[in-house]
Length: 597
Image (cartoon, rainbow, N blue to C red):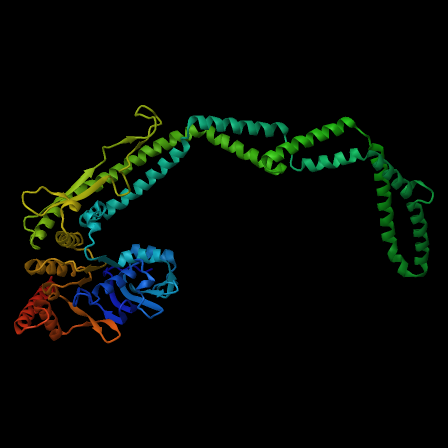
């Protein structure tokens, strides 16, 4: 996969929605910069945002399908530059992308009343889990009133790290932690309870000794069964071998005597007809075979001897073999395999103390490497925290939070060591571990906030109101990503509950954020709408039996009318139009200033 040397942030180029809620068919092209969606309350703006959420992996229900329809489709075209992170995700999925540095991604979700909902990326079927992984790189959606992530200290750590630009330190810390954790796990598995270890040693030694004592040989049982069968049939075998020797060799008309006479006759015939000459060699072979069979039968008979003691010995041996095979796997081969396994486990246990000492040394080295990496990460966070606080407080003044205070508190747990097991520093088997340590270091970061003078800063979740949280989230996101291109950001009425000068300040912050990444925003504030790079209006139309939602981009004259409506309400006055024109012109000046930066 080709990686872009000049990174362009992901953006949503095209969104298509069909048969979702009140939408028959909708298609909209977005641009880089600030895209604003306005419209009357209840016109369906949030339905568009929810549909976009479906393209990032959020769960959607078949209940969203428009009434009277059997299926629905949501489709988005994203353009982005290939990064190493995205390359890793796509290479592991088998999804093919074009070779160009800047790629395009078509995400489609198909909903059906039958429940057969499907997801496609570039026409390849994928899972919701995979779409969620990809969506995390493409779009960040901030829903109306949803500030749970802002109140979660885990996101505070991520924001501070984004501002401090600690990617290298995070990578080193993560690698050191994973190595240390793997060694700690291996050591824990090696250190089992001493009584369990002694019991296992006793069992393995007993089993190995028991098998060694019998001294089994592969295939031994089959040979013993053959010998046992012969001893139990000694009389019959004696008669059979006697009869065979007599018939083949000993009596006057034995088989061999008859064969020799027949061979002489064939020899005479060969003198008259060459066809008989071919039988000379086979007849000689037959004679040799018969002589060998007769001799073997005679020798077999001479060596037959019934031995009750040998029979008893064989039966005892077979009984011992049967006992072991029942206990250890059914055959002599499985018994011998069990012996080899037991001996190997014994060796491992008996050498565990040496292995444990090696792991202890390795663990201490890896812990030291981790602590050093985490300390470097901590130092960089501390250095960045003060600057982050100042920038946030300065920006809060621009959104009518002049007296607000903001603090970044970093809890360093590097000295909080815990000992696992009955251990101490003097015990060579000691292990030092802290549950607060992770692959992100040993810091816990939390943002504290106070909106009013005289009140000490407290955790965000305890003090920030909805309007304050909206503004603070926008400030934090703007500052944390400054200078770094990010995924598209979607804000659903982030400016709810504010107006006037504060709304204008929020709009300027959105405009600032849009310099670095694509921003889509649903708003009811004309001060925000006047700053749009692309202004869309969402409209709901009703006929006698049908309600539909549509979206369209506005030209300059239409923007004046829409912003005048937002200012004046249902009855648009010339004064409102004039004010709207002034606001749009002011917004153009802001865009021109941004373009020069």
